[in-house]
Length: 164
Image (cartoon, rainbow, N blue to C red; front, side, top):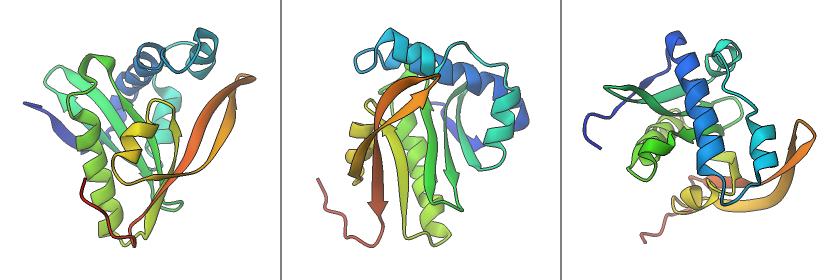
């Protein structure tokens, strides 16, 4: 995508990324999650205060266009866990998620992690599967007492990848 920049998270991104998250949950997951589930997952856009606390503790990268942030993804190095893989619906399917993921996986490999795990939503599961991830098991997480099905997935860097 032209003019896309992948860069480290900054404190001033928090409010923008809270909105990206909310739009992604509300607009991009409707084929897989009910309105009740989406409302439990993201009842309203946050102001960024809680987001900064969460995103500054892990290695978060931001996808930015001249108009502002359009996606983000994070790596919790201590847990070898990919978190917060969200792209604004206005740019979904244009390579933003792939660009974010390439940076995250590259960072994980560069620091010597042997693999990664994530909890992938039904929307994100095909994205990760296309990049060599496998489902370890399916589960239901609770948000505001509402169940949201997802998949615990893993990618082992020690396994030779097969070109598709």
